[in-house]
Length: 326
Image 1 (cartoon, rainbow, N blue to C red):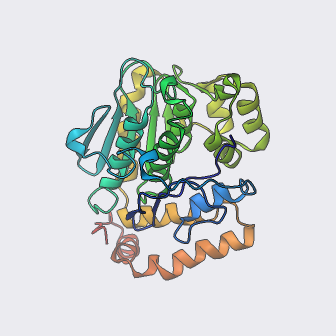
Image 2 (tube, rainbow, N blue to C red):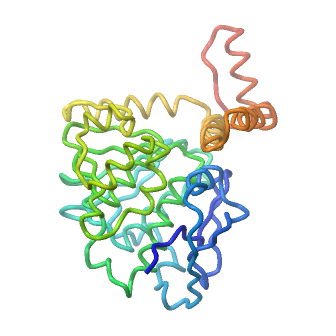
């Protein structure tokens, strides 16, 4: 069976609105969906060329594909909104192995705050000693592959397409799908306990998301090394190659997380969104097109914000800005 290019059942726009398409289709079109975001377009641009598969039977999707779990019914993700931060914690002892339900809960938690102006960022971390050991082996069956890939796409699309900055905290092994979750963080904080690996090649497969995402983050050579060898990368090396932003001792982790939360949430929410949009919207574009894209966001969207004017006034008046988040 040919591995699939890209599920197409869920998309989001830069306003944070999540659009769930009818449950009859999940996978895969060779064309980029018309409302795909710049990040998903950039990360799939070089993965095109394979034939897609279109599964039209709703029964093959299972119930989770068409009905997102309600937050009060979450089983494997602890979710809460605290101030300006939405917290998601992977909590499926003891290795936080990912299954369809857990992935759909990640997606539902992130999507639930996409349109909440008062929430400025999303924080994803884990309970236990492992961040995530990857996909539960029982999910790797021919009968369930479509449901699993659909759930994967829902979680990863939520992380890629949300307008909120996503911070991922890794304090243990992140293997397979867990490493892919970590890679999708806009900022990654790790301790020396963290390890990153894509061991799928040892199981006679390859990680389709990592194969598309890692070249943009690490470059093709490093992506090849991780995917083709399946060997684990230490937290120290992950910091050196750019997979991790901040590496701190475990006893300093909470302080570092609080520091980064404070530094991000001190900014204007909509300006954070536009900065993220400008950066990710330029991925994969030639330099001149990327500059034009960034300038378009700056001139056509940023200038209309009250907070943009407030920032200039505060600078002139030599005071701290008072953001209205609009």
